[in-house]
Image (cartoon, rainbow, N blue to C red):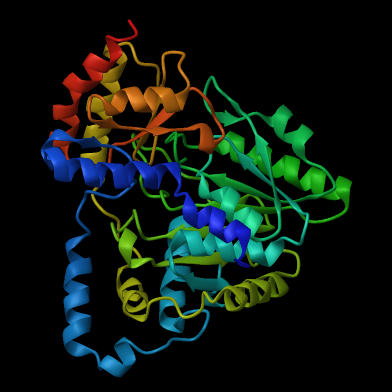
Length: 395
């Protein structure tokens, strides 16, 4: 059959995260949901802020359906883009206008559109391990080439010597993700400043712009007073990709945005390329109802205290059991070592204890699994005996 072989390959085999999630649904149907400890998917367990629910009700009851559910401008409704810009200006000490905001169907669309806008065939895009598995799919779909920079495993910050060695004349973009999926690590101000300095220097050396794309769906999910440096304050040629999936607990509604720094060289051209990429990919007119919701709720964030409590319970208990853990400063993931086993083999052993943990080989790092602790506290507590039993197989 004469079809696209790459699409067939992607559709025939789900990501490792989705494979575990589907296995978990099947297993829960067989033995009961309370007996399966599913840490596979980053699906928020915290309810959206009450104002989100109230705003949705108000919109549905008071707004003319033709306006509520009709098409918006391709790049998004002006009122929504204005609300997003105002929030960024207020929270990030920056000045951006709605003319540089593009509303999207979540962060996946934001990344896909941004990469399509800046990459040409054969351009290289650097990602920092560990990285979200779908980066590879998004980059290759834009005809780019993935280049992996390995981290400093003592703290999972950027290894700048490795990064510098990986930048070539073909380097066109770099993606960062902080707080990070799957490690929960937050890049420090020093890390961001040094990264920006290197990219400026390398751009001058190779004679063209290197774009910095910041993937920020977890920006508000930080603990212990950590602050997330806003990348546009440090590097001019930058784009921010954002989703309200985690900050408002709306993952299934697929609403987010791209912000193009007005300080970019030829900023208007970059924004127009984003608009054109959205058009070519069919990502225009993000969901109208949720654009109108964001116009009213852009400043809100869920209560992350439940995630913080889950983090403490899980991290402290697993450490006491002998697990090697990377303590997360943000997001809701815990990176855990595999006692010297291959990650896929460890994940299979965990399944025998009804623990669903994601092997991180596809995240660009070996010997670790990811635990998504955005579940109920009850699930965390009830899973501890299973984690203890699993650890006894190695200690």
